[in-house]
Length: 141
Length: 141
DNA sequence: TAAATTTGCTTGCTTTTTGCAAGTAAACAA
DNA sequence: TTGTTTACTTGCAAAAAGCAAGCAAATTTA
Image (cartoon, rainbow over all chains, first blue to last red; front, side, top):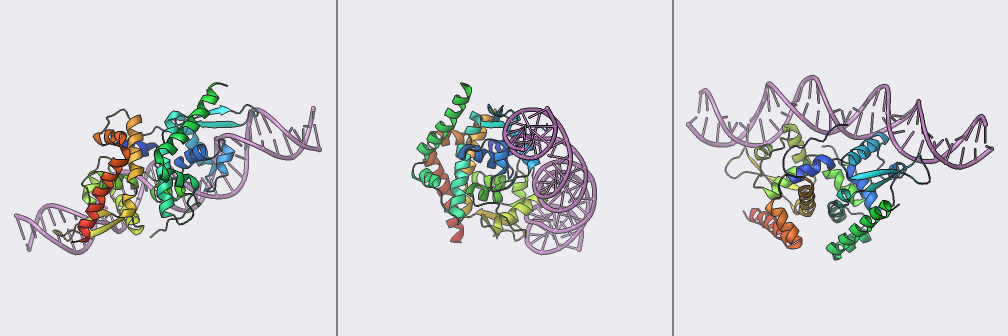
């Protein structure tokens, strides 16, 4: 597997060394803000990621501890991907992209953005708690 | 100039359509958190961006209203790049990358990160005000 | 129980982007 | 007037992305 090379000691560039592309954060978005958790489900997202790119990004994300994969309990040919705490810690980054995008994209402002703008700290905490409890639910099975 | 194509109506993907690469946010970082404002200064950053990529990204950022460029008052062969309000609105995104990167990069935690963690809202406001006042100073010259 | 389907990929090929080194052109300084 | 600074551009090789097709294990259907 291709290793991530860090270009400097700047924490922003460190982050971008993992996340600086058009697809990685969209996979994490799906894991954070939708119920999607499998390869097939990620493929159904509007942006239409290519199958090889998706496979590659999932591999990189897992190798670097952003997500974990487990065989589905019902179907052994199905993998369930889940966020780790390291991945969950990116919620604020993605939330800020959402807020910025909503401001400059004419499309529509989602309820979650309105909530974030109203009370960012609590809303982020709430999302974080929801995702963390998901991890704990998995751990106990 | 190559037009940005939006892959979906999601605000996160909308943002990534502009910013989803390894270099764009680093240029904005330099404009936000350092005194760098010229082509030559951006080239001196640790990450060593290639000259053609820098030229391309500056063009894209300007075309899409994130930055403006002006001839330097002292030297007519020098251009000063400045953030627009649209660019300044990305401060929270970059701040969150900085916070996340500082948590997962073993290197060192910068003072600005400590300040952000202590009082995020006020610190972001402060940075924003500093950058906005820079715009206004330019506008009045 | 054999055939078709679902699921999660891999492979091969073309196009696009990146990265590197060298070159250019206007302004400026000596 | 000659060399230097500044901001790029150009050409080419390497890497990454994108697209269509193929594959293999597990599961469902006939």
